[in-house]
Image (cartoon, rainbow, N blue to C red; front, side, top):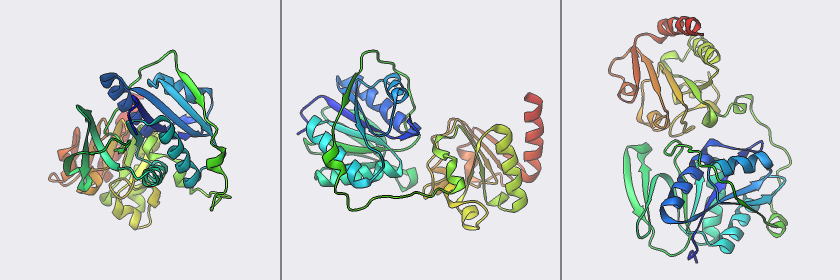
Length: 324
């Protein structure tokens, strides 16, 4: 079925702007395309505009398929992907790690009776695609291949691949009519209610300041919040802090929360359990503040500060003021 030289990448958008996870996937797709002479097709489903197209072009898409849909629904999006895979027969279908991408990819691959891999941290191609999968929160890496001529589906780990600009001038834009795939739905979403905390997208944040158990008090959280505001960053939290109710569950960073890859990550009172570390390893620069010099987070930190974060953070903020 996948005898074409096509490679597809699902591009998820937030208010018409492709999200980081999708652009990471597109960048990896473009890399594979250049190495193996594959046409890279960006798939846009939902709402988009000329700016969306421009960003896809800037990140190297050879073609853009557009399917206009008013509202997200797992069945309609999934059926659209099924139709496109049948029509274009890509060798590989990539998506970034997001709840929507996971749902849509799982639906489509199941409907097509094809294999879908999650937590993919690397892809190489020799005779066929070879995937590296992160297991146990990234503690174990396993190589896998799929013995099939059909399309392979892969969900890429957040932060495992970097966004790389690779502008393309002449890009073919294909508008697909998928009206058949968006009717007769069993479930229709009438309204979505979003928590205030969800308005901050941790996966897209360039700076994240995380509140760990060592700062898990109202006074400690206030300091973390002040530091985040001073840096123009978002606030994250470890699982014990969210379970205490001090911070919303939507701000949890780690294996059971959000996988993040900011330019700067600051862990305040974060010891560094493996489940948490697996969610921050894609960060460009990690700063850790903890009074326990044996805390595991120091093993992955670029800068480690041994000390009580309640005392260190005010000094940190004073130095930042001097720089500003």
